[in-house]
Each structure stands twice: as C-alpha cells, then as structure tokens.
Amino acid sequence: MATKQEFIEYVCEQISGIGEIRYRKMFGEYMVYLNDKPVIIVCDDTPYVKKLDIISNEMESAGSGFPYKGAREHYILDIDDADFAKNIVSKIESVTHVPQKRKKKE
Image (cartoon, rainbow, N blue to C red):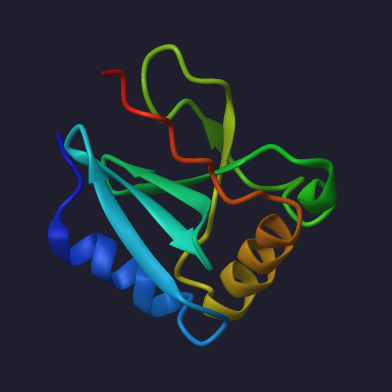
C-alpha cells in the first residue's frame, strides 16, 4: 500500500511554518525535506524519523518500525500533534546535512 497524496500533503501542512518544506516521491513513497535536508520518510501513510540521539528523550514513548525492507529501525512520528512534530523535525534538521548531488557517469 503506497502513501496517498492527501496524507503527504497533510504531513507537510502539519510541519509548515518552520522553514521551506517540500517532498519528493521515491519508489511510490515519499521523503519530506526541511530546508533541503531529508527529515521524514513517509511509507504506507506512516511518517518515520531516524533514531537520533538529539530526539531520543522526546521519542522514548513513540512506536518504532521499519519504513521499508532492509531499512534501519526508525521512530514513528506523531504527525497529528503539530507542535510536537515541528519540534522533532527542527531538531533533526539541525543535525542533518544537505545531501550532495552525485555526479552523473558519462
């Protein structure tokens, strides 16, 4: 079951106002970016965030799961609580680097 367009738009709406938000479709699922930094992966209408030390205290009671086969375990983000989600995403963004574009092979 792939993520619905309405759900990814809802995720972006919930964290709006903290920076430039965009999303990109990848293999039927989505990556959400804050200021060009990947912060949330959305698979099967479930928002996941990496297990990082900077958010471990706030996320200790959160569920966890694997966004796709072969992925590392991630926290499941409570996207319905907009203030909480914005706080978590802001912290993730502060320690995440902008991905480097790969050079195309000739």
